[in-house]
Amino acid sequence: MANTAPSLAGPKQASYVQALSILGILYFMMGFVTWVNGTLIPFLRIACELNISEALLVTFAFYLAYFFLSIPSSFIIKKTGFKNGMALSLVVMAAGSLVFIPAANTRSFGLFLTGLFVQGAGLSLLQTASNPYVSIIGPIESAAKRISIMGICNKIAGALSPVILGAIVLKNASELEKQIAAATDPAQKGILLDSLASRVIGPYIVIAVVLVLLAVVISRSSLPEIETGDSAPAEKSADGASGDRGSIFKYPYLLLGTLCIFVYVGVEVMAGDVIGTYGNALGMSLDKTKYFTTFTLLAMLVGYIIGIITIPKYLSQDKSLRISAILGIVFTVCAFMTTGYTAVTFIALLGLANSLMWPAIWPLAIDKLGRYTKIGSAFLVMGIVGGGILPQVYSGLYNKDGLFHFLYSEGMDFRLSFLYCMVPCYIYILYYAIAGHKVGKRA
Image 1 (cartoon, one colour):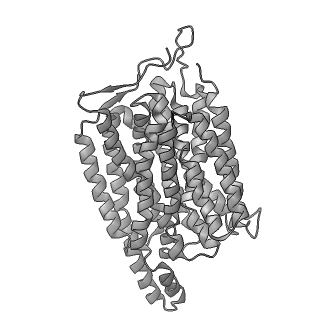
Image 2 (spheres, helix red, strand yellow):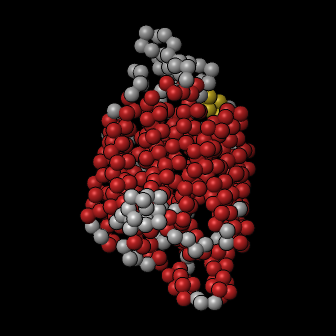
């Protein structure tokens, strides 16, 4: 046999469907909190008087938490179990949401970033608990289908969050931006900026309350615990001898999968959160671009539905990943070669290309880890930091004051910068789909 199979512990009445329903609610909240960043970037750019590179620190602070908190999160999960870990993560996310109150009252970008980092820390813990739970709660062969179902919940929330928050905090944004730019009296300008910043307080109080209520529901639910075989060997070789390798670092397909998650989340955030700034660079108004993130998320939603229908009946997880990577390359090149709404459409279509990547990469990377499943999950969650790094590389290339100004004193064309960031990432994802997920994996 391969590794010891994970099993459900706890009351029998805690059904498979009930567990997936609870997880679906969690993924909905994850999506809402995560994809609202696409609205926060232009909002904070105006309210805190930032340039594009500074505004993109929103994604950097948010996703940086995954890098620092993923390993500690795995140890927390070992102590608390999956269910209590999920409840704790929601409380941490609520605390991060409440930091937005003093941040808005003082228009402190540093406090906003602190709140985002705390939210990211909570999400890191939630991802570490929920992702392996979804993967191993049923047969590994259909893990991509279950993750696709969770992805639908996540992306529905992601599509709604820019529309809801954008309608509140960026109402008449283009006109307000003109008024702020035209204000010659510092006091009057300050009043306009303070009024704008205060718009975010109400929504984030509501988010915090919902997160706390959900934490209570989770902690009192009959959600079954998952036994990952922590005391059992990770796998056995073909002749039946123990195959425990003694270290997580001796599973190269997991390490390559961590890098794959890094570049995947990077391209996903570029397609979702950066699409608005891409539209602004094409000359489109903020009143239009504030909803562009929703278009990307709707494309991802279509992709998840395709995944549910086709995986594993018609497509294997690795084959779906190959197709997705190729589509990503094609759509990126098409966006580079076009302009206006056509270019924006191709960037939104990257959501379709990206949609099946997470559901495919995750089960391929944690397959046969056995007692290393929790720490392996933490490694993959750590790779989510790519969502904060790639936008910084992008802004550093095209902004004349960016990270790479010493290479391009006037900044690189924003379309070329986007191309240079995205295509190499999709090429690596294609490699992992073809060969990387097999490296060091025993039959």
